[in-house]
Structure formats: structure tokens, C-alpha cells
Image 1 (tube, rainbow, N blue to C red):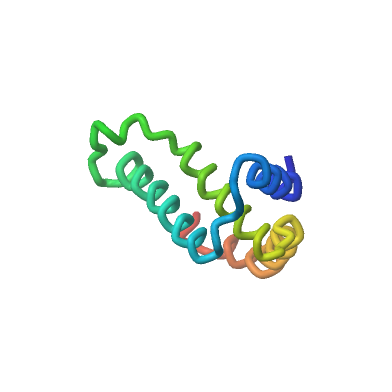
Image 2 (cartoon, one colour; image 1 turned 90 degrees about the vertical axis):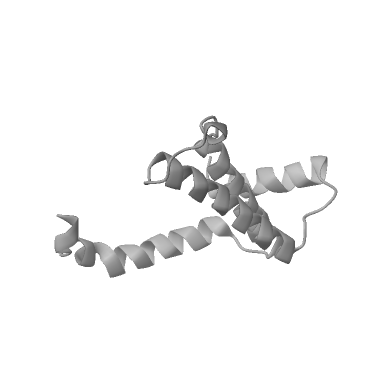
Length: 108
């Protein structure tokens, strides 16, 4: 699936199962909440914090999918073609960062 199709799937889901999109500010708050859930799993599972028993069954993939869903909602409701925006960003990063990362002694 490409990003364009994912945006359409989210829009179809909202139209079929949701009443409407939450407003942009609510979705931004929801995105922050979802990123926090990802951070909690990463910090406890891969970082130095101990993982609580109640967190051991948390699915990182599911939480990342929640982040993606809200990002797609924000793109849809603000009229952004995320496929196009991503391709442009990847091109910028490729031109800007190729040599920089290869020359970074910290990464070797």
C-alpha cells in the first residue's frame, strides 16, 4: 500500500465508522498522546527503564499504527498529499544528508 491509498483508506473509515474528523487541534493532542505511548514502550523495552508487568503485553506495532492513523487524519483534513510531501522530503534528505552521514565518524 502506498501513502495515497492509506490516506484514502483512513478517509473512507472516517466516513463509514466515524461521525467526522476530530478538529486539527484535537488530532494534534491525540497524536502527542499516541507518540507518548510509543515512547513509553521504547523507553521501557529498549531503554534503561524497567518494564512494568502491565506494559509487557503492549504492542509497539499497534501503537506505531495509531501514530500513523492520526498523521493520515491530519494530512487529510489539512489537504496535504502526504505521498507527494514524503517523496519531496526524501529527495531533500537524500541530497542534503548523503555525504554528511557517510562522513560522520560517530556512525562508524
